[in-house]
Length: 347
Image 1 (cartoon, rainbow, N blue to C red):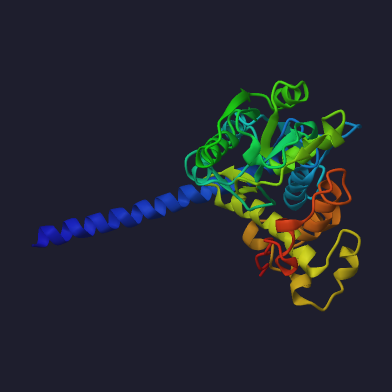
Image 2 (tube, rainbow, N blue to C red):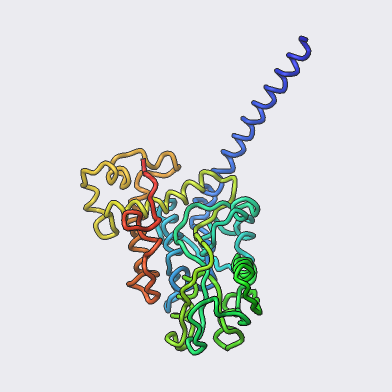
């Protein structure tokens, strides 16, 4: 009887020790990325090889886009300067390998959040910065009004994305046959479509809008069909097991969303530091305390808004009506305007 009690106690103590040990290891791992970024002096941010509106170099070679703004915001929060980042162009096959190997600190590359990606590839998402869905781009001259008229069509796709499986599932459910033209490099897929190797290009609707405006010689000769055949919530990813870094990237995005909801912009942020609203004062670091839980100073969110802007500012200049893409806010509007963007409380 005594031996059994001792064995139970030994097991219990072993379990407690294991939990404490794992907690120490997790704590050490969670601090690693922030320490590495600070020691290096810049953020390594994984982006696309060129996707207008989201991550692409401009005519001066400067990277611009909605995802680039997230990279800049994380750099502003952690390093005090939005320009202390390096864009690392990656194709869809390279992105998670680069993240897991430590080549990049955050993946901000129009990547859909899925159960598999959150559980099986060593990564975890840190929020949604664009709600999207897979669509179809066709020549107007084909006279196609609906995706359900695409039976027998040749469809260009990029390999290594969720688009392949989504299209196959949709076609099977709608009894539609098609011939896939699957190409590894995104730019080569665009070139194949522009050269007429396929009737249709299928990818996220935001990508189709970007391609139509920035990559096709006569944008008006093409149209995006009305059907959206999937849910594609796009957002940044970090490595699993790095909870402190996950928190920083997650709350960077939330700071931009909260700023829009509270009416704080890059142009009025200094004036708003005099606000009597406790939420604004806390967000901008006037009332201390919001940085300590993240391992940052209290002005981390102030710098994000000052140097990058709130979410609405970023959306409009990169992909919204003030941009060549002219994408309406739709699901990406704040919840108060009928959208899905519901900022989590900064408190």
